Image (cartoon, rainbow over all chains, first blue to last red):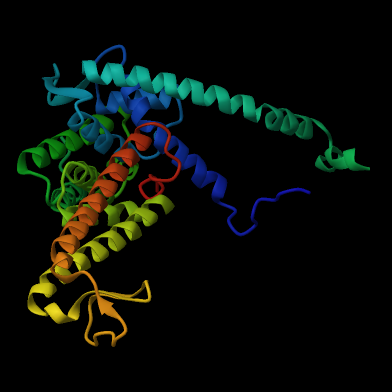
Length: 141
Length: 202
């Protein structure tokens, strides 16, 4: 017996992936500040460079605002040499501790999941390496 | 210098939609977003339209700030009104939010009903109480038609403090459950949330 994905919502994997990224964004924003202070656009660039996390640039600012209100970040306005001031964020001690807890929770969660997903990933590697996907289902004959 | 009608529209729409956020916070948000726009245009050479598109529509951006504020305020408050508003927002963000919302409605209605019937006991003492017949509960609360004998009212004036305490406990318990689920949902969002942020992920 095989379970099939419901044909009624073809966009599900994309939406699920978007939610997954969005969910990890707060942790990622904290992690980007691990080695020093950055301003919003630098955080976005950093996250884009390290991961494909940022969906829309606007989402990062309300998250930074919330993390600051929760006492995990502090901010200061710093005047740039040429022109206008920028709002720099850095981790507070609480933020640093929280990020370490999150990183541990994430690592154990992701470790458990990838163990669970290994057979699935191996199987799909096998299917894509064969000429036609149907050959992969000959096992029941 | 960026002086553009479109930018002005974007910023004034954002300012307007930030609504209930305090003046200081609002100004800081506007300052930060306009610094972002200016830096993006100057550093990447992208057009203003492209930069604004990547930021997302102003009302959506403002809504994300407002949601953060509402959840934060509600998870520290015991005001049923604020908690209900927050649970309405939560209900738009996933199945567990809808469950919390209906639990909130249910809890506040029943709890409120108990408290009201405690007051009704003072005004309609004969019509308010608990009626039992042959050891079985026939009816309770404030009734228009009193159950006929052999049903008997057994609670008497004890009904008043009992209903008052039960109702208050239920209202407090409901508030506590909502606060709990708001802070859980915030915690979950900070880690690995698949469902609660569905609404905001668009």
